[in-house]
Amino acid sequence: MSDPTRDAIRQLENFTEGLTVNPLAPSEVRRQGDRLRRRNTVVGAVAAAAVVAVVAAPFVLLDRDGGDDSLPLNNPSGTPSQSVSESPSDSPVTEIPDDFPLAAGWPDPSQSEYGDKALEGPSRTLPALDITACGHHLPDLGNLDRLDATWKNVEDYRSRELLTFGTAQEAVTYVAHLRAIWMDCPSEDVGDGQTAVHELRPTQVGGESVALVTSYEMGGAPAIGLSVDHVIRLGRSVLVDTTSTEGTKDGLDQQLAEMTDETAPVVAAMCLFTKAGCGTDSAAPSDDASAAGSVLGPDGYGDLRLGMTAAEVEDTGLATLQPFADPGANCRTMSIHGWGDTVHPNFSGTVHGLVSRNQGLAIIIAQPDMHTTEGIGVGSTVQEIRDAYGELTGSDAYSTQPVDGIRYFFLTDGSNVTAFQLELADQDCFD
Image (cartoon, rainbow, N blue to C red; front, side, top):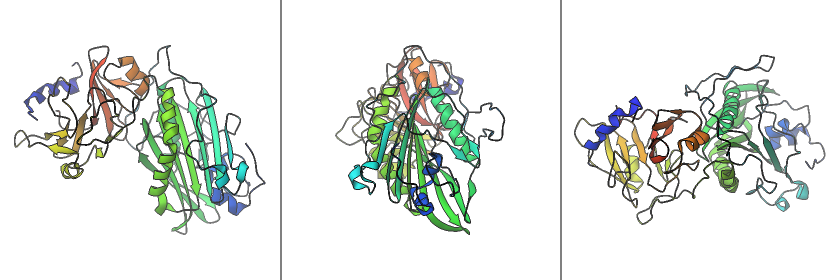
């Protein structure tokens, strides 16, 4: 392999192992959440505290035109930037079908006090998002298509916006702008003595995702109001899924879990906007089930997650760890129950991953029929990798840019993928 960071991989052979209701009172506005403030359909007396939902994508450092709303795109996470890679002419779909199931998973309108006015859309005529935090707005970044839907009930407001772009990199750039705006505004005064506190919460949905959480404080004490915007990027599409309630931050985990379950059919339909498709659904490993055709990523496989300690890996009951090859070795091999032999130039037999003394589960090696969350697998072309992930590092052997410290590493024959793995970007199993 020509990537110098991978020269030591050879040494691993030593291992043996719309419808608008009457104007809302200010109190109802708060119950329905910040998202209403971004739709230009709310009472102006309520202070705007926009919530941004963002994908856990690396920051992109971009030049922006100045102006009162101009915001420098800093990189508080220290994540490496990405650059744009053009896609071939035989690109995936970018026009959203009229029957796209954007409202799938939401309750039936009959369950809302608004009745048949509870659901608006899906439609291209609903107002688009106006992403704002601390007075900074998201610029027009050139999406090709847009579809919106909203669902509302007393103390429960939900909305979704789906955007498509010309390339996967443009979608990454859009998300990076969102994240930069949000990260630059950790809190803001929203009036009436209240402060909106913004928190970025990494999630693992689709190709990459993150939730932006807004909770409220008054005089330093928690106040009622919780808004969660969940942004999910898959290929050339970005979904912004929002739920605003009268809850508090204590209910965040449950709300995120419910939102993830509800959006599952929407995310599955977003595979339309990837070049390679998404393969089959991910399945948890078991003693009597093969991994063939399942998805590796975005942070692990089933209950196995990169970064788990050796004890946590063993506690899952899904894998067996072999002893260290020698007392000074950094890493030892792992076998996942129910998986077949590994097809990889540096590993063989039932070596399915590496566990580091210092970092825990550091690498999971894909089975031959597995795919990434973006549908890339053995046989995919190098251009398809770029179309899914943007700029790559290396030649013949390629690394994607890290997302929350995790990346894919693809081995190729120069044109097509021959094997791949999911790994910690700073893993110490290779020199």
